[in-house]
Structures are given as C-alpha cells and as structure tokens.
Length: 181
Ligand SMILES: [Ca+2]
Ligand SMILES: [Ca+2]
Image (cartoon, rainbow, N blue to C red):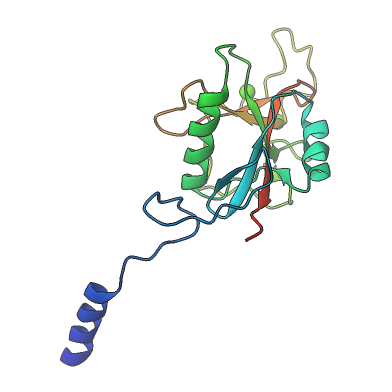
C-alpha cells in the first residue's frame, strides 16, 4: 500500500501536464484547421456573422454552412465566445449574437438545437432578469421571448451574457462546427 502511494506520487510528479482539447490553453500547441472566415477554439470552428437574420433563419443558415447554431458546453467555451464577440460588437446596444438555445416548444424549458437540455450548471444568463419572456410594455408581444442571444461590448467579467428575446428579431449569429484535423 505504501509502495502504491509512492508510485502514485511519482506518477503525478513525472507525468507532463496534459493538454485537454477543450480548454484552449494557449501554452498547448493547437491544431488549426478551419475554413476561411471561421475561428478555431478547442477543436471547434466558429463563424461570427456580420449580417443579421431571425433566429430560425440563423439556425438554417448555419446548417447550410455545414455547421449549426452554437451549442455551449463548458464555461471555457462560454468565456471564449463572450470575449470574442465582445471585440466584434459595435457600441449599438442591440448588436448581439444568436446562440442555438430556445424555449419555443415549452416555456422555460430551454433546449439546444440538437434537442439536448440546458444544463443547470452551464447557464450564463445576464443579470437577474433573464430569461424574462417579456411580452412587451402593453403585452402586445404574446409570443414572449423564446430565443437566446448573447454579448456585451468588450465582453463580461463573469461571462454571463445571455438574454432571451423575441425570435423574430434579427441578430448576428454564431455558427459552430467540428474542426477537421
Ligand atoms: Ca420564453
Ligand atoms: Ca429577455
């Protein structure tokens, strides 16, 4: 048992630090193989559109490009996106980006575009009023807010930058695809 523990200690000290593929650690060599106009991070490629579409149009357009609206699966990925779009946004307050998250089927049941549920541990809603399913000042938007967009100019300190909004708004979008290594 004593030997086992010593061996374990030794192994810990001699194993070089690993380079997990999903952290984007800048000390690790990264393969970069993304199509023109896409940006590499953690084994994925991301497209940040200059143009604006509704959420459904954005979902379809990402598929046309060979990807899908972004699905955010880790804090690291959220931080990366938050910072990236922070540098791409104009100071216009509504210049935000669609992500692949909607509660249009059942209110407050948020699903990603691959039909997976939104994890309780990976929710990055802005402030304490989102998601609000706001129906307008006079209740004139009965459909409320069922699609998610994200972004704050310059990025956020806590990476919490999601807002629900009416799906028929037009916004920029983040498409994602696997990097072909
Ligand atoms: Ca909603
Ligand atoms: Ca909202």
